[in-house]
Structure formats: C-alpha cells, structure tokens
Image (cartoon, rainbow, N blue to C red; front, side, top):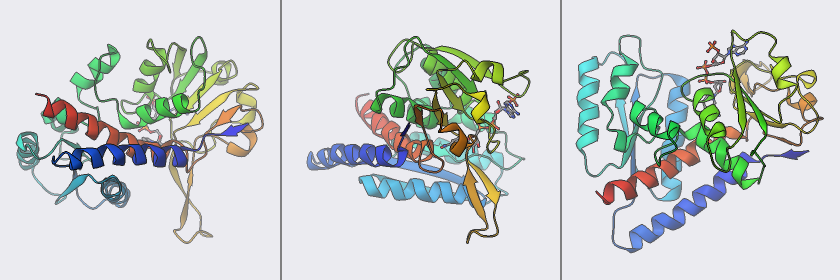
Length: 293
Ligand code: NAP
C-alpha cells in the first residue's frame, strides 16, 4: 500500500510555479495576480482565504483580499465583480462560498468573466471541460487528476466509482475520469444519497473517489483488494482532547481501508493541499491567456 502524499506534491507544484513566476519577473513583467472576494466573517471561509493569500506569497504572485460586510447588497457585490472583471491588473479571482442567504450565488457566478474564473465554476468553463476543451478545471478535481498523474496510476479501462455529485467535486471529477485522456478513459459510476446499496458498486471499483462529507463512510468491507482510494472529504469532528476543539476527518475509514488499498490519500495531507496549488496553476494559466488576447 502506498500513501499518496498530496502535501509533498502540492509543494512540488508550488516550486514549479515559482520558477515560472521568477521567469516572468526577470522578463520585466508583473507577476500573476489573484484576488479573493470574502463576504462576512465565517471562520472556515476566513481560514481558506487566508491560506490562499499565503500561498500566493509563497510563489511570488500578487494577491488582493476583498473583504466585504456580511450585509452587503447583492447589487453592490455585483458591482465589485464588474470592477474585478475590468481590472487589467488582476488575472483571476474567486468568490469564496458559501455566500449569505440574501445573495443569489448563481447570479454572482454568472457575473464573473469566464476568462478570470480560476475556480472553473462558470457554466462556460464547465461546458468546455465537459467537451474536453482547454479551460480552467475546478481546483479540487484538477488536484485529484494531478495526483493520479504524478503517481502514475493507471486509469484507462478501469472502473471508477465517484461518491457524491456536487458541482464542485463529484460531477466534474466523474466527467474528467470518463473523458478521453490520461488520467481518464475510465468507466465511471456516480453514486449519491438516493443510490441503493452503494457497496454493490464500490466492491467492484478499481478506483473510488469519495466526496460526500460523512466521516468514515467508506469501510473495509465496501472495497476490494488493490483498490485506489481518493478521499476528498473534509469534516470537522468535535474533539475536546484537541487544542482546536475539533479534528479533521475524511470520508474513508483510513485504518481499515488501507489494509486493502494499493494507493490511498490521507486526510489531512491528501487532496486538501492540492486544491490551493491547482488554484495557483489556474491563475498562472489565466495570466498567459489574458496576456495573449
Ligand atoms: P456537497 O455539495 O454536500 O455534496 C455531497 C454529495 O454527497 C451529494 O451529491 C450527496 O448526494 C452525496 N451524499 C450525501 N450523503 C450521502 C450518502 N449517505 N450516500 C451517498 N451519497 C451521499 O459536498 P461537496 O461540496 O462535494 O463536498 C464533499 C466533501 O468534500 C465535504 O467533506 C467537503 O468538505 C469536502 N471538500 C474538500 C475539498 C478539498 O479541497 N479537499 C474541496 C471541496 C470539498 P445528493 O446529491 O443526493 O444530495
């Protein structure tokens, strides 16, 4: 059994990005610039955005954090998005989700210029991805593909079961794994909360990608020998013994499933760190696309 070390791979990717940024700067050009819009003071969102800004600094990107009050009007937020769309000094930006209830997330998403949509959530980019065209791939599925590639894990002709069908993980990773390419060329089943007897699918899977958010959901008896397991789940579970008052748990019962797995991602330290690295990669791509217009 091999542990897929997402922390290590994400650091390698950041180093590669830094080399490209140094080259851009030595050519006398400005470095890539990522902006993040944060509405309100949600604790988890603050943590995510802070670590995105920190990672920008690590690779030499410019970064801007746009902090807006929780009661901002939808039309004010839309105005801010237009400003970012029109700002030639910004290559890409993200709007940290979730947004407060009074704001229509879909409206905000549609207002983002697809050429700056480094999260890859805009329907134009999602459609391009589904058609196998060059575009921004949502960072978490992009990170999973990169892990499979760097560990040289065979996906062609394999049977992949994806647990979860969200727009940001389950749906896009199922499309990517099923698309022509390497990684890809896999036969994919997507299961969800309405699927009966999920173990009937997972027991036959060569690769399981779990993105549902229930700690320890995937158990030893649900998988076959030699399975590759990618655990996307990140759930905070209360733990009074821990200084933070909680621990992070994945969807997979790691200790039992690892006994059968050929490859497995840990939580934390698996898919999680890859997400930010791939967001940076998308920003670098955006920088070169926008420059060539
Ligand atoms: P989500 O939008 O809540 O979607 C969860 C999916 O799981 C849904 O499709 C749901 O089915 C399915 N599901 C729920 N209960 C189920 C059950 N008992 N059996 C089978 N399927 C079930 O979640 P998400 O945004 O995709 O995130 C999933 C997990 O990944 C969360 O723990 C999240 O924190 C984590 N995550 C991690 C990263 C990272 O960087 N590593 C990034 C994003 C998300 P229905 O469609 O039928 O409701």
